[in-house]
Length: 455
Image 1 (spheres, helix red, strand yellow):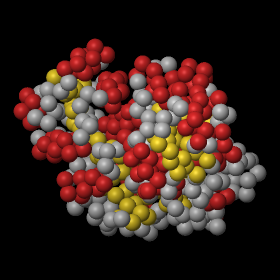
Image 2: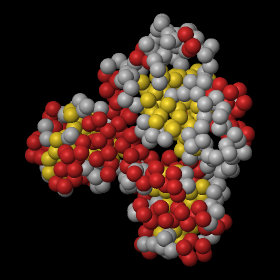
Image 3: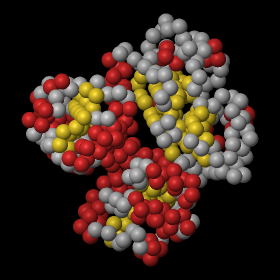
Image 4: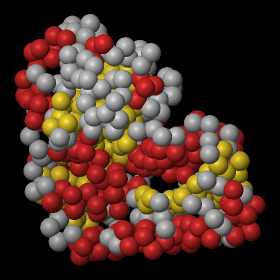
């Protein structure tokens, strides 16, 4: 597929990397020639230095032959204009990045009137992911699947954990209707079988209903109640969206922001939040604002190193849940291993994965695939795929899962049937109109249709 990306910043570059890895023909357009050259050198893209709002530049990029057009600059207005020009040139599918909350409130009208296929708001998506983690603070990462009825959570197995030495089949027998659908051990990812044994240092991906995951943490004596007071360090757009989400969940939010103008604006638009004018990297300010009595801290400044230091200080102050925003994903593993900060979020990668999941879904639809949704897990090394089973006469319908002959590194981890989630066992079957959640390792054989799961 030929894809044009206008905007080679953090989000645009991440999308370009993911799409070229999928062998799409990607052309990057940006006024900053160095950004364009970075994408050309690192991701095997083509590129043009110029404005995406200049029709001559778009013609040079081959806009009339593009299958998909993405406008991902930091300017909402520029993105909308670029998509309008692309539509005029005949591009059917256009995606625009929209970040301004005032625009985003009327996004459906904009999508319809401008003919946009998709809009993406990296800050709102990041806020949603953080809110999910705070809703279930015992987990390091939480993903919703199957229309929100299934959760996949990440759990690290630390020294002394009772899971060490336990096989997957024994775990399910002891902890109820939960399923370990993936395991990360050092740099290796594993789709486990019933005989796989859990070791110290493993990171488990566990699929279940929310109530069963809660019970799982309680039985492990790892359950942490939902925080009542959350401190956000840095008052950017993520903080705005997150404060709205947390207030709706009944949490008390304090935002520490060092810009007087921004602090005044946040006080106006977030009447339920406490907005403090101060430097979030100043330990005295944080102590004065009660960090030691705070249940959760989210470090959201624009500087990775500041967020790391804030997070370390919060942990030293005894804060139960600390979430760290990072732009450089390479910091993430170091934090997890040496600094003991359990939750890291890279907003541009979250947005990039959402965009690429949409694109892959569109491509598969064109090939009569039944993939409804795609989720990236375990540092993007594992995929969770949702299939909607529409063929009542398919040869896998009504057959016990243990007899399906699934490929290696493929696991059916959930079946949604009439709004009820089933965590399957070998004797369970797939029925017509089920939604089936499948977990597999990325870069295994490409899965486009449910039949591709079987040998």
